[in-house]
Length: 78
Image (tube, rainbow, N blue to C red; front, top):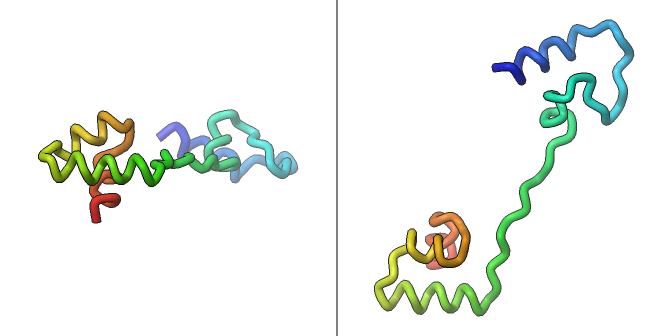
């Protein structure tokens, strides 16, 4: 909720807007979004995942082992 209030206050300020800079530090998320980098799995790792899954290792266990989300494991198994 604080972020929404801050965004509202940012919109009604009488000060000139600075391009690329947040007036309020909590606005930095809205002003300068940061793309989260995805975990890249190598072809070897994907092959290992498929092999281990076929041997009975569950997707959540594989996700923990490879440090990725279980949805990533399911996506690579398709």
